[in-house]
Image 1 (tube, rainbow, N blue to C red):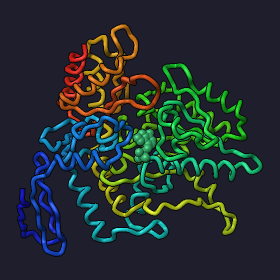
Image 2 (image 1 turned 120 degrees about the horizontal axis):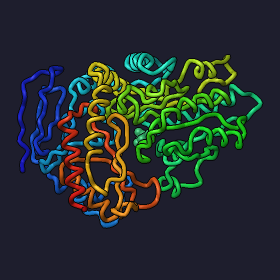
Image 3 (image 1 turned 45 degrees about the vertical axis):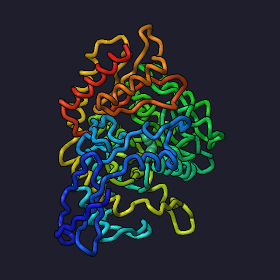
Image 4 (image 1 turned 90 degrees about the vertical axis):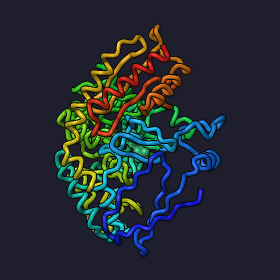
Length: 479
Ligand SMILES: Cc1ncc(COP(=O)(O)O)c(C=O)c1O
């Protein structure tokens, strides 16, 4: 179909009319120096599918046997919903990939980014940028305790990479004569795809093809009910030698590894152990931060302040990529020294603290804090968990989580792990019922029948009911 050109008369700088893209059939270009011009054309979905199949290498997916109709072509999003190119709307109960905390289509964020791009598209962190300074100050006010110093990066992986490097340099700076570099982390934990963050990750399927990984990461069992608690971790520290260990790195609630909520005493005790041996407690709040679990940060559930906190995802709700590693005054001070002492943190990220990303994060935080979305996360999260727990089916092994971070684990009728074909059929049935969820994958062997839920924090009770109803339908289909 020939493009249909439509010239709009609105002058530059005026608020752009919201473009509705029903089923992805409308595409809009804006030519800045000639007023707004929209080009409306039928989207050739089939062509896009072919381009994708021929050229896009998708994450965590087996391409052999893949057809161009296997994946959805998502073309628009609004609130908790996304729409595909065929016009079908889905409730995105995964919020992109655990990150669209304020929901899709927030005009305030789009406008803030637009304004910043017009003002200054880029300048690095080697000098002061207004949105980066404002965002760091805002974060210092929101983060627990005296976590007051922020190093900006572009992703959760980089936030963890940064934390790992800070821990090594800190260990040697604060304990001269010792060689503190080891980091204790947990099996099933996930910290990112880059070499350091992946070495800290404890998920076999994501690690083994890339071994040998970076040395200096010691894995312990994740908390499992009362088993595998902090005492075990203390024993590992003693066996390794406390003078060789610099930090414990952990997700407050292990996310992609299956939503493992620790007992309430777990993190306060880890805090004590870190203090006892002079280790840093580094919490990866990449998923749990910014309201996901019913508090602004998950560490608030247990009243603890980590020494280092890694954040990303909900920091900008995914509107633009940004992550950060934030540290307490004490950690920051360990990097102070005279010129020539080389105590400074020797890392630069070209795009870390990108002005447009910081502007997106600032607007996102205004919404998140203004609407107190962690409260909705707690309330609607409880409602959703209860609805899911009420489902009476021998196939449901466990529903677990906190706030709007929930997992549903399935099993066969005889209590063994739900088999592969039924697990796949269940995922498809959820999709047909109009609900997108996450699914555990490449964490350990087997079918990993754990379906994860992390909808936008604006989810309503009615939408929670719709998610639970989709689970009921999908369970019926595989029963
Ligand atoms: C807990 C946790 N940390 C780190 C990461 C890595 O973040 P990114 O994919 O932005 O690099 C993720 C990603 O899912 C995560 O879940």
